Amino acid sequence: CHQTNFVNMTFVKLQKSKAYFKRYQVKFRRRREGKTDYRQRKRLCCQAKNKYQSPKYRLVVRFTNKQVICQIAYSLIDGDRILTSASSNELPRYGLSVGLKNYAAAYCTGLLCARRLLQKVGLDDVYEGNDEVDGNVVSTTIGKTTYYVDEVDEDKRPFRALLDVGVKTTSTGCRIFGALKGAADGGLDIPHSEKRFPGYDRDSKEYDADMHRERIFGGHVGEYMEYLEEEDNTKYQAQFAAYLEEDIEADGLEELYESVHEKIREDPSPSEKKAFSPDKSFKRTAKLSIEERKARVQAKKDAKNAELEAEDDE
Image (cartoon, rainbow, N blue to C red; front, side, top):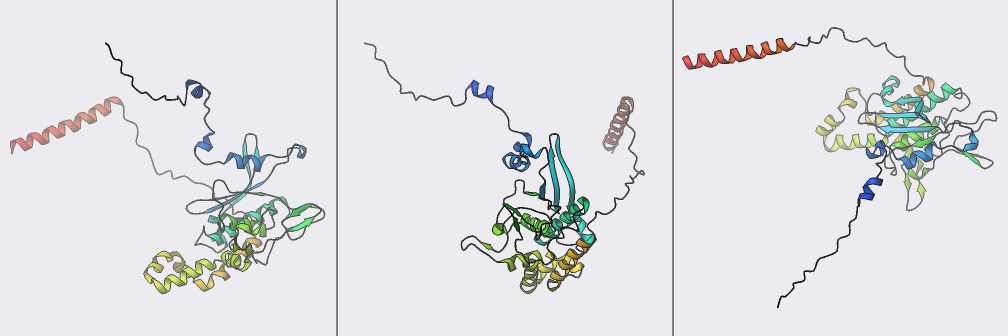
């Protein structure tokens, strides 16, 4: 009698069939690279149809390893256009040559970008912004609309821009909000609240404006300088070498930033572009022909063979 052995086989469902791969569509290139949040971008750029193609302006804030960049941009169908921009690399013009990407530098860059833009569009005399930096959110409500400026002119409304943070995490006290505060104090109408500024406590729902003001004037940097100088002077000398070279001490930081804010307000215009003159002394070596390359290789071979023969004779 023939006995049949039954083997228990599990049923495996084919998860991704040929139909799945035929219909697969790759995401946009900048999404694949992790550079653009398209969900955020759509909401920042899409304008209501009854606004007749008037652009939505964005305050774009980006941090590199060495600087802060603020731009006022708007989008067209073939790409974005930059209305004006400011970088913390320009701050040495105004007397700040160290710490070009901390919270205080971000504030200065935002202020510079705002004043430069308003000068360009002819609103710098109408909207002078907030001269007394106190860390509070300034807003004015007219009808059902809230404008984030001190006073609204009867003839000319303030220049509205929306904050574009890119893919950066918007945590409380983030430097991006330093640039936002600088631009808002510079006279731009940027919708915001105090909930992400330094000094806001989420649990008690209270906002300490003095703590934010201290951060704007580099108080946190000064505290750390004093702490390091007492605890580990060697580390202090190394970490704040650029500050010591410029004779900047913890006590003088607030005065330094105040003077920078004043100078930015006096002249926010960009510096004149220097004419580019290339270095013409460098000459590329001429490309060798195939015969010359073969001769060069042969010469190397002959030299090596002669060297080996000389060693054998010895």
